[in-house]
Length: 183
Image (cartoon, rainbow, N blue to C red; front, top):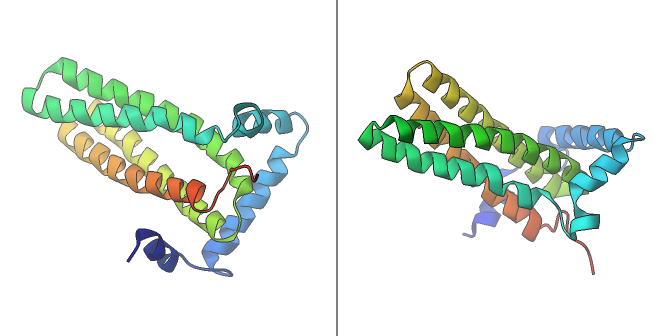
């Protein structure tokens, strides 16, 4: 069974609570981006007009890359206990958190392009990203409290969640064509 078929079968369909909530959220976003002064900013954040495609897939590279680097330094520091490796891991996680906030903004403005199954899938994608971000923030908090081992586990879980969400984001863009120009 293809993974996309599994996702399609697992997500609730039209009329479901997910469908209703995703419609409400999308309507709120559409209302927000139509406000004077916001429209120009949202157009710039979408990227389609000036970049030729959505900005969101470009900016997600920052948090994902930072979190992968953080994972590498977490593995390295677990065996070395070198404070420089720990500092590098923590710094990479912080960069990832800031990058995730920027990515979220570009994702929200792109959400207005999603329809039907893609809209529901996008809502799940956003929820997974929020969960991953929460795991990374919790990881940083645990590290600050001296609970580095728990912090590493939370970050590893966050990377797993964001990896699944990234696959889903690719499906939204490439299979459903959200944000793509129609020729």
